[in-house]
Figure 1 (cartoon, rainbow, N blue to C red):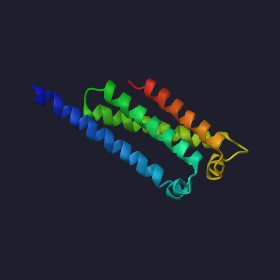
Figure 2 (cartoon, rainbow, N blue to C red):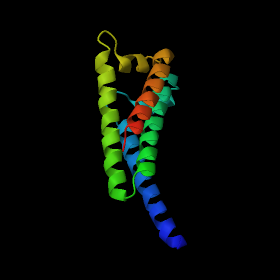
Figure 3 (spheres, one colour):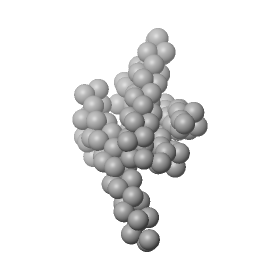
Figure 4 (cartoon, rainbow, N blue to C red):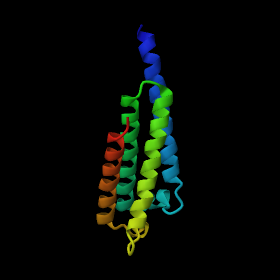
Length: 132
């Protein structure tokens, strides 16, 4: 009986970690921000923005695991949630008409980094709240 509960738990955990790693690899290789170099240089604003993206994606995966019974449903809702998170990040950049978020983050504007952190946390929280 215990193995019938433990095996699905490990499968859910494995798939959620794969999704988080895929999402992080996308963020790590994003062409607009040279993330690796910026973090080595001590750019705090990019670290804040990256932390918000990681927490938002973790919130989405968390809700997908909690609210779904099968792995297929979890994978589907995680993909939908992360897609909406990508769309919201693109819309956030486009909404700033006279201001480039990426340039401000590259210039280590910590106020922008903090705002982006909380915006991503808010997006992740809202997206995960509307998941079935």
